[in-house]
Each structure stands twice: as C-alpha cells, then as structure tokens.
Amino acid sequence: MRVAPAGWSRRRGPATGGSGRVLRVLAPTTVLACYLLVVLGDTVRVTESGMGCRSWPLCNGHIGLSGVYQALLEQSHRYAAAVTVLVLATFVAARRRAERDLLACRAAAAGVALIGAQVLLGAITVFAHNAGWTVALHLAGAWLVLAVVTVTAVRVRHLAEPSGAPALAQSLRPGRAPAFVAVAGVFLLSVSGMLTLHEGASRACPSWPLCLGSQAPLRLVLLQYAHRMLAFWATVAVAWAAVRLWRSIPARSPRRLVAGGVLALLAATAALGGIVASTGAPPLAQDLHLAAASAFWVGVVVLAVLSGYAPSPVPNVAAPDQLARAGQRARAAGLTGS
Image (tube, rainbow, N blue to C red; front, side):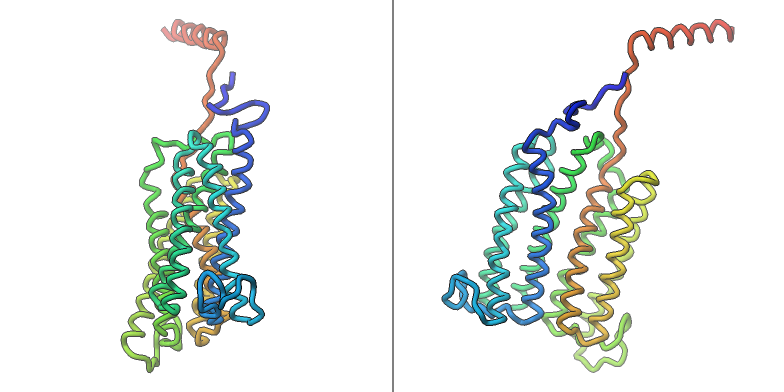
C-alpha cells in the first residue's frame, strides 16, 4: 500500500488550498515583473535619461508622464516600480503558507525590505545627480530583489510537486558549494561591470578578451581587467555548478533544462560582453548585455536553489498481510537453506 506524503491529498494533489494556487501564479509573475523593471532601468541608464526627471517623486513638477523622451523613460521606470505591490502580495501569500516552507516566507519578506530600500536608493540617485556609486548600489539592490523573489518562486514550485518536501538532511551536502560560489561570482561581476561603465573603463580596451593597444590610463585598464577576471571566475563556477546539477538528476527530468539554459545564457552574456568591449560600448549593446546578464542571474539563482534539493522518494509501507507473507517466505527460505 502506497502512503502519500504529509500534506498530500489524492483528489487535489498537494494540500495547498486557495492561497497555494494564488502563490504559484503570483511568485513567477513577480519575478517577471522585477526582471522587466531591471531591464527598463538599464534602458534609462544607457540612454542617459536618469536625469530626465530632476525632481522626485514628481517629474519636473508633473505627476504624469511627460512628452519629453528622456523624462518619459525615467518617469515610466518610476511608475514601473509599482512592482512593489506584487512583492508585497507575494509576501502576504507566502506568509499564509509559512508552515509549508519557512525559507520561501523569509525570501518574500526580504523582497519587501529590499524593494523599500530600492525606492530610497532611487530617490538618492536623483538627488546625487546619478553619481556612479549610487547607480551601482541601485543595480546591486535590483539584482538582490530579483534573487529573493526567484528563490520564493522556485521553492513554491518545488513544494507543488508530489515529492515537494525538501530533503533537509541532505540539503547541506557539499554539492551546493559550487552553486553558491557561482551566485557570489555573478553578483560581484555585475557590480564590477557597473563600476566599469560609470568610470569610463568600458572604452579603455579596444580588444577582447585581452586589452591590447590601449591608450587609456592604467587605472581604467586595470579596472577593465578586474572585470574580465571576475567574468572568468564566474564562468568557471557557473559551468561547474551546472554540470554537477546535470549529472545529479535523472536523464528525463525537466530540471536538466535549467542547467542547459544557464549555460546558454552564460554564452550569450559573454558574447554580448565581448561586443560591448570591442565596439566602444554602444547603448544598444550595453542594454542587450545587461538584459542577458539579468536573465543569466535569475538562472544562476534557480540553479543554486535546485542544487540544494535531494531526491525525496515517496515511502512505501506494505500492508499487514503482505508483511506476513513476506515473513513466511523468509522463514521457509531459511529452513530450506539449513
């Protein structure tokens, strides 16, 4: 007789109730909205529209969208920050299911705190006239928001599966280390990339991957090399983590698509980075590079979360009569062997 895991209903699957169904839709929607907000924010940056609105929260004294191109982009980005409502709603839904997964609830709570900090950083960025350090912090905060809402979405999706309870005893196994190294490497790479752009080092090296024939100051060349070395470290770490995940899951598991997708996004991000470096960092190339990098970041976070799970087989408990027959066969086999 097969016994279903705790919290599982034969008729409805996991006993998640209405709040569980809402959360399974709300969490990935929040991830998508946060991703689009990051991409729109980068479009504002590369088009030099960050100071299109010289006041905050009003845009040059207007509450609505202005007809001027740069002000329109900047104010659109501010209104897109209404994704805060989705982050809050995800937290409320996750908190109602805290007994199912405490980590998902904590990640959702972190999203609320971080999105609040992002609003404050956005205001500081305007008042500081787009100072490099404020823009770098703003992007770092945006990626952290994207990370925690992704953690929530993956945990919720995993718990919706029949074997969704995480294997806690194995969740800290050594195989997680490469994934967390990959997360740290990609995050540091994003911050160094933003500093490289704002310090003018993106045009310091006319060639890629080596910086040959540069006439730029040594400080900018070293910053460019530091960014490229971080890119190499992140590439090795991500490839290592993706291969380990690929080898640790069954051949037909859809989770293999995650590993393959992360490697594809890694290649796309690296190729676009080479284009940015070798073509003088045109705005469109920069925008595409960060869009690919942000999608790559989401993939790496998913990879790290999935690397923490071990297979959780559904226990089988034999019926009493089956146990009795098995015992009789064992005793008979023992008598025969003697």
